[in-house]
Length: 93
Image (spheres, rainbow, N blue to C red):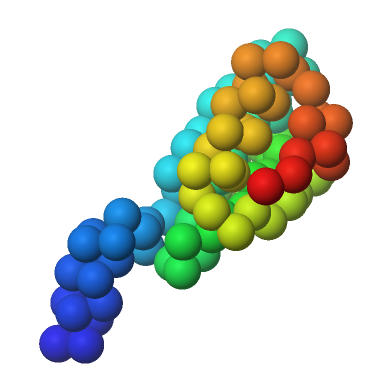
């Protein structure tokens, strides 16, 4: 019952569920790497550069937390389009 109320509130606020992958793109020019955005369930999200078979068998090469899902997805899109890992380091909300 409580979980369904939380889910309804998240939907109303436009917030993704905890650990939900809200963005994922391959970084083809970097071998087996991908950029992934995982929601925290409170409106924030973490952008990760991962290598391997995400989410089964992978290593995280770089990660950064953003206080909004929109900012995290924006940074991830820039990483996937520009292939610049430095975008995560320089990203400011």
